[in-house]
Image (cartoon, rainbow, N blue to C red; front, top):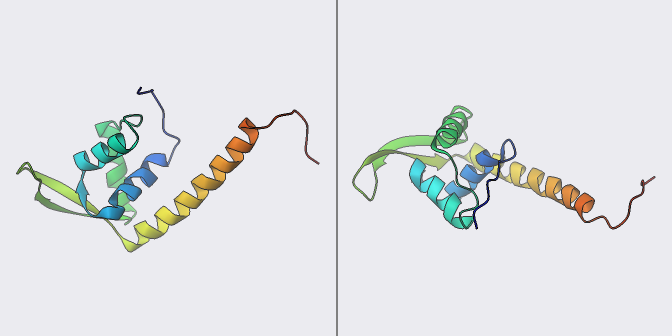
Length: 115
């Protein structure tokens, strides 16, 4: 059952970087993989996707070149750079730490300050 989730700032970037670890993809294929892999929970809007792709390309975490899709259409294909792979590792570590801290709070069974 799809839910309307708002992505935490920066999360879309890491999702795009992760998607491209298996090779170059065009924008629609990136959005489709994220949606399919999240069981349709994460449905990325086109505008947000393309703004993020351009931002990541400016940061040199992605490189792009024009190619032809399986549907015989011209599209820009994005691929991960070495700097993008480093950034992905750093962001995954940051998100894991954030989630661990978040769930420590959500799973707390009592109220009390830690000294």
